[in-house]
Each structure stands twice: as C-alpha cells, then as structure tokens.
Image 1 (cartoon, rainbow, N blue to C red):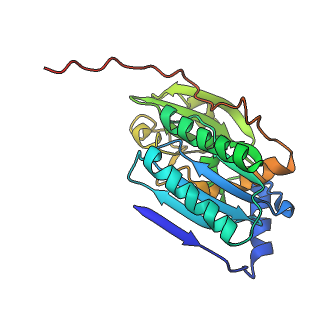
Image 2 (cartoon, rainbow, N blue to C red; image 1 turned 45 degrees about the vertical axis):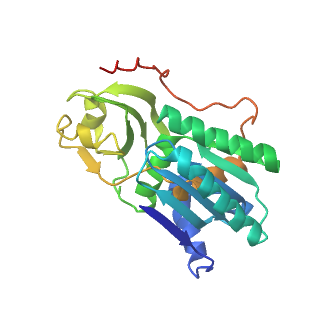
Length: 261
C-alpha cells in the first residue's frame, strides 16, 4: 500500500498544536525549517517533507522491503514538490538506526547524496526515539511515572529496545535484549511500561507483568520525524556528511547461500 498526502492549509489551531508538542518533544518550531525526512529502518519505506513544523508531503510503501525500488522514486517526487512550490530545502533528516542493515544503508546513502548535491545539513534521527513520537502525540500514555519501551524486531526472541520517560529522556540506553519474563521486571515493578514497535508483538506472551501495556500498530515513519529533526536543528546537532554511518548496534553477518540441488 502506498499512501500520499498533501496539506497546504494553515490550521487555525496551529499554535495549539505546537504547544501540544512542547511537553514531550520540546519542539523548536520557531526555526520554520524545510526538511526532507527519510525512513528506511524497517520493511516500510517512507519519505516526507515538513515545513514550518508540520508535514506537508508524505509517501509510504508498506509492501516492502522495497527500499531499493521505492526510495529513489519517493525522493524524486518529494524534491520536485519542494522545487515546484519555491521552497528552500534546509536539511535532510534520516532514520539512523538501529534497524535493518540494508534498509539503513540505502536510506543514509540517499540522504548523504542529497546533502552533497544540494549543500544542505544532515540530521540523524534515532529509530527507537522516532517510534515514541506517535505514541506521545496521540497521548496514548497518561501516567506521569510511565516508561516507554520502543522495540524493533531483531529476529527470534531478541529485540532492539530503549527506555524513555514521557519527556523522551533516556531511562535505559539501547541494547539487544533476549526477551523473557524477567527481562524488564525491575522496570515493571516500579510502574507502568508501554511496549510498542514491530518487536513488541512477539513479547506479549513472555511479558505478563500487570504493569506491562502493549500498543499495536506503531511504525517508524518519515511523517513523524520532524519534531525530532527540528529539535536537532535548534541545537545545531548535525552530522558529518562525509563520515556519518548508521547505528547498526550489531555487526552484519552474511550467511552462506544454500547449495542448489
């Protein structure tokens, strides 16, 4: 499924929307940057354009992984949209991992090429932090003491996971966790923990603590990157286009091809 969305309307509730971002994401919307957002860390390929702290162009492919086929087409359309509407591209934001080794390489390579060609800044957005954005903006978590645990599938019963509070402050750093009933028991004993992302579904049977909550349908998407990208622009947190590499967390291991009979 490919989705396409445009929005030129200036919402009458725009200032209200920006205030809603502030408690959780500390959105620095006064910079009004035009950002090309690229997300390829999972099977979903998505590209979005944000301007003045709102998403105005969005393309998604959920039939992947098709990054090698779809990303170039999506980026071409996004850049044409920017140029046709006389906007000046300020930066390219790319999901930097962890996630799919191949997907991350394709996305980062594309982002770096655009930055070189257009002379703009490169912004890295951590994938697990990005997963938390739609959860917070939809106000799915209401308890002040709650913890958020975005998860990405790392095969078998292993996940890439990180723990945040409701202000997106890191409580526990990223790690590759082998999930069983005791993996997050210490956190769960302290209060509610919300698990989400494509690694969370397979953990539902293993994690049965009463403080464990699971949110379904959360994916890292380009349209949700702009609050984190704007924050990094405000903090002047840019990457070196020449030397930046994705955060894979674990080294890629090539498997020997099966012999054909």
